[in-house]
Length: 184
Image (cartoon, rainbow, N blue to C red; front, top):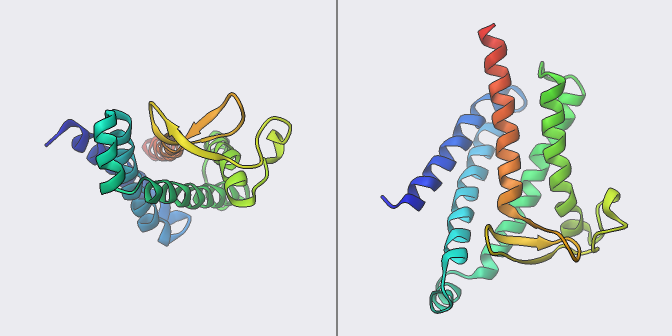
């Protein structure tokens, strides 16, 4: 097995681990997060191919796997992931879980990071707190380190993988916090 394949398999395993505790919010979240995790691993694998490709390989990638399709899947992944984070933040805020305030804050921070990209993708306007600095459209492109990304303003690019990492880390934090409380 290639290192890249192993890395994506490990990434998906992380999604499976965090999905297990999500039934306490909504039974459907378990399979949804696993599905989102599988799509994330697939998108990360394709991003890795784009980032590592030399110009000759890039032509093969464009003709074999549509970068346009990949960009669209990335766009839809961001919209869906945001909705999961929004729901979790709302349920925690409304006291529908026994999660500590620091877990709620971690989920809210991830949600807010997503919102910065999601609002211009979905509404064609800058997110509220970034109206003075960001474009009204998150222009798609490729970050040479992470793959598919969006240009927020003249100086800032946010990659889908960066958002995915923030989402996964927030869910891992939530899971670890829950496990620690059960051990006490």
